[in-house]
Image (cartoon, rainbow, N blue to C red):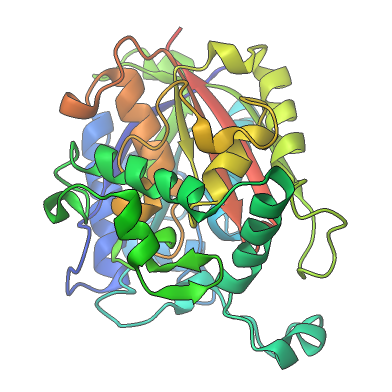
Length: 370
C-alpha cells in the first residue's frame, strides 16, 4: 500500500473550557505542524460528530475547498474507517493530503450527547426503552455479564483491565488520571455500581479532547520531516443496531474486521508490537483481544502479550465521546519512537481497533514502519 500517516497530534485534553471548533482547529494545526505541512496543502477532510455537515463546516473553518470529504457516522470506529477511505482516495488521485480530525468539549459543556442518543427516533428503541437502559452502558454490561458467566470469571478479572490502564496512564503526563495515582482491584470493586457488573471505574472517562492525523502518498511522505507510518491494512464490519439483534454477544464484528486487516497487510497477530484497542468499558479489552485473534476466548483478562493502550486508554487517559482518532495518534507516536516513558521498545507494527455504538461497528487498521 502506497499511503502513509505523516502527522499526528492531540488538541487540549481534559476540562478545557474551549469550544469544539477551537479544539478541532488546534488538532488540525498541530497535526499539520507535526507533518511539516500547511493548511493550504490539505485537499481532503474526514470528520464527524459536530454539526449537521461536519466535513463542510471544518473545511469552511479552515478556508478550504477540498476535493474529497467524508462525514460517515459510525461511532468510535469511524476514524479507522476514515483511514481506509482516505488511503483509497489518495491512491485514486481524489486528493493528495487528507486530514482526519475529531474533537469534543463534552466535559466543559457537561454533555455526553456527542456519543449519540438512543431515543424514540430509533426504530428498535420501542422494544428496549421500557427497560430503561443506560445508553450504551447497559448494553456493554449485558455483554460483560455474559462474558463472566460463560468463562466462569468474576468482576475482579475485569477490574484488572482498569488497573492496567491506570498503570499506563501514570507514564503519560497527558492522561486525565495521571495525577490520580495507582489503581487497585479493590478500588475498582469498591466504586459505585452503575450497571451490573460494571461499576464507575469499569467505564470510560468523560472528557474534552480530540486529535488529528494527516495522510499522504508514501512518495511524498519520504520527503517530509518525520518517519512515514505506512498504512499496511484495514478492514471493517457493521453487525447490528439493537442489542436484541446479535445471536451471540461474545461474537463481534472485530473478528471479521481484524481478519480483513491482517489479510490485506499480510501480517499475523504475533507480528504486532503494540495494540491500541477501543476501551469504552473494561470488557471491551479482553473481548477485543480474543475476537481479533490475539488469544483464545475467555483468556483476554489474563493478557500478558504486547502492550495495549499505552496512553491509558479511554479508562484513564481521555474519552471525548469518540476515542478512535486518539488511538491512531498514539499508534503513530509509538511507531516513531516518540512516547518517552511509555515507549514500547522497537515497535515497528501497530494494530488499531475502533468500536462504535453498542459494539455495532468495528474497524481495524494495521500500521508499520517496515
